[in-house]
Image (tube, rainbow, N blue to C red; front, side):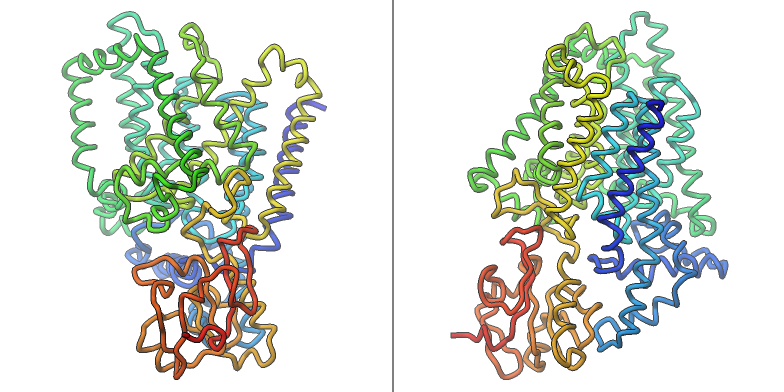
Length: 617
């Protein structure tokens, strides 16, 4: 049996394992903001297409077009979702609940299948860029990642973004490696689809430009004419990439046909660039003048300096990342005395630059499984030992650099935009980190003293070991994959501070099992509970509303402790004629009739309680 066949079979096993864990979950819960896509945006996109209402394809600022195109494949199999949106907080019949679950299953399944099919795309692209072994390891790490499995099960732009941004980057790196124009065109097309999915992909516009300079620095250009020609060609290719990306956006975004300004709204006027687009456009303009008018004199001076000190440049870069990682581990293990990272990430839009930047590695390091996290760290350490003579070769260790830069500069960009890098806000970094870890493992098993233990058939024993470790992690976090936290993280902390409704379905099922459940009235700080509950449900925390309402049960969660004025900060609250102590709602280990610990962590909970059990003293 050929190596290619063996690798394909292993990928099929990865997909089958992913399906084993993911498929039973696909209709059983509602994630945060998913109702906006399932009931409104996805159906709206295809209704607008059917009616020729091109303006109606402007769904939101994401803009979410790629997601709507993929998820919409499930619309022919369900009734109009708008009819069921109206009853999310009202009593429901078993038939209505079954149809709501069918709606979610039908709209999620195309997204989920797309993510599984993408594993083959990752494999064939990475095989061309790196090697078959690294590609296989990467696919195993990506396909068995709890967090990537979790995000793939929901109708959300991030469920597509974690695929499109990395494969755009990989396609571009193949173009740089082979100077193959086909991959340049593919890069532009993929970039356009990524931006159509979510404006965050605009990050790639400046980053791809940076990679042109990185390649120059890592190469050995000696002649002046050769250097000038390099910059001219790369800048022309960069402009071609931008043009293809914009053309892709225009073709697949009907709203832009009648309002061309939508091209700007999805790019430089998007939330990702709106505050810094003059600086980015101005920088590109200066570079263009330098290259085409001044024969790249400034670019050559700057890049030649880094090229002459490339080893120092790489080691400094590596030490910066290692220092940030060391800070995260040290700060976490001493109880977050320097930076309360959980507090920063719980309100990711309120943090300052340094708070956002220094907390960024936390969800990544503890959101990867322990093995992948340690391999990621090892990869950076190996990079500090690279020799100058090795940089001129096309060795895989050198190819780690663009991926490492991606993560680091992504954190800088997020911090500049005033956004904390929560699990979901940096979901694209998990496959990137998996690739880095795969490269690192490949380099480790090439070491002379280790190579003999993993050569030939023994390599597949290593694959088997990785499978077992990965499956254990999936079983341990099942079914709350998106809330996964590594065993390296102390039990009192969690990674996913901005949860996506984890545990809401399980709570609704408990409530549905109670006698006369359709006559029960509840209040929940997770609105997702309401959708799958057969009785009456509300999630408003308005004081006047609470005083005039009577609830049989209250549902509280760790996520409910976050917000402008969470109930956990109040000393008393009137519900009907009763005065309760809302702080008791958020005691993780007391006052509950039924409780679930998300990812088996006591600090991450969702529980049901009777108001009479938490009366104010």
